[in-house]
Amino acid sequence: MNTIKTELTNFSTSVIESVHQIDRNAWNECANFKNNSSNIGNPFLSHEFFCCLEDSGSVSEKTGWISQHILLYCDNLVVGILPNFLKNHSWGEYIFDQVFAQAWENAGGQYYPKLLSAVPFSPVPGERFLIKAGYDKKQITGLLLKALENLMQIYKVSSSHINFITKEQIKNIPKDNYWLERQNIQFHWKNENYQDFEHFLSKLSSSKRKVIKRERKEIFNSSINLEIIRSEEIKGEHAKLFNKFYLSTIEKKWGGAYLNEKFWHLLLENLKKRIVFIFAKENNDYFAGAINLFDSNTIYGRNWGSLKQVKFLHFEACYYQAIDFAISNKLKNVEAGAQGIHKIQRGYMPAKTYSIHKFSNENLSNAIENYIKAEKLQINNEINILKQKSPFKTLND
Image 1 (spheres, one colour):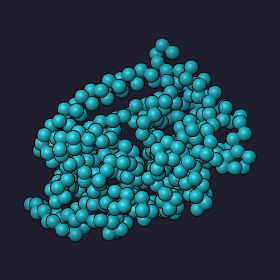
Image 2 (cartoon, one colour):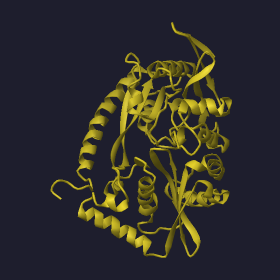
Image 3 (cartoon, rainbow, N blue to C red):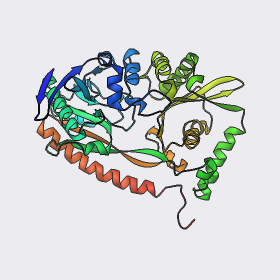
């Protein structure tokens, strides 16, 4: 444990190699997470979620995710946490840096291992510096970053990355601590106090409204039935069922799954109050499903799987049902995961996401800084173009 003395008090840091080495309540207090009916706190930042990843073996040395979580203590009380991993690859991150790795290795450098602060396999924006209420956010952020930079030196890594961090948390980084900021695009739906789905549709242009109605009608008039299963309705059998759909789709698209059946069982056992399943069945046979997690503000669409292709079913199960849920439960946002320009026509508008990066080698850092500057211009131009494709009414409609 390293000790950092300040004029006010003594701070110390430690690095743990398992989330089980910290008390659940201590972690969740820093994450501002409550696993009860209040739905307070992002479920992806909870102690429960990280335990599910670790206990299922999805996060382990074997899979290339070695836990190196940084804890900050104030007089022996945990007041700050930075979830963190030592990695020898870039899979499962959704912020792509393989081009950096290849360029550096072509120049004779060694890009891996690296450090990554993120929620594994989850492109969900949120806080990465988990700070206990009542403590100075800028001070705690600075101390956690100092500990992270010390860890970079200990492991002699090429770089450290903090993915899907909020813009607000980036502002808390001390100005004398320079990290490169990278931007990307996701597509999020915003609840403008809609009373129901029809109210939302009324805000769209006539042509886009007709498309959505046609897509939904085709599903509703078919032999397919949708079931919404949440909270106490969720049983262990749903984990096995969903895993079958998930594996079917993942193996067709990517050839290998990050998550296993044990993960889904653990997730349902530990976070069922925060889960919504959308299952599709035909002739009483289930063949497809989507899983969502939610908090008091947002429903997060995470994974989808289907044993067969059905036109418009993906849109209904993953996008429209999530909007219905958000409106019914007065949630402000729907975040439907990474990528997907097709989401715009369904009311999901472009939103910036952020990551920050630090590189040990000055030449590598300078080269990537130039790359990121050009990338930011491209991102801004792309967002401006995408906004022109908005399905919402204009003054001329």
